[in-house]
Length: 233
Image (cartoon, rainbow, N blue to C red; front, side):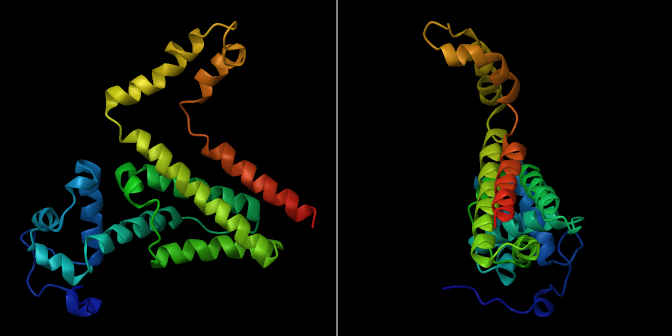
């Protein structure tokens, strides 16, 4: 049975935790993000979280209905961090380009949490705020609603897909990550043109580019395509 969730004012502990602080949603999310960063998603549990907070594990359920509810809150927090310091400046193209890069960077700053949350929809306040900002930029630029929704869909899914892809590489063990990155020079660069003419011809360029994220270029391609459609009416 789902736990009863009470109002924020009624949730605070009457006594401090062992660390001398009062519990709050913000503190729990902050601690959970740290635990996921240090131990991975498998290391996050109510028991371990309670120990880290200096509180009983059951205290977590006064703020969240369950661990999945907390997972959604982690995703919402990553979006909140991306939005911090961002504001629309009136140029929809550059506004969305900056916002996309900020969301991608916020997820990569917490790669374990990114892998855990990039595919989820939280419905949290920050997620709603970023969706409102994206759609507002597009509609105010003159995109009809069906086109604004189409561009929004591609924009946000592309951003989160790249965040998950790039974060997944960052959480690999260092030997595996180094091996993957070295393949472009150790294997691709050694291919003979007699069997792989196109790979052989482009091997130096592949080695130069393929260990960097393609997201900035992909994001600009999407926005350029949207701009061309808008200009064409």
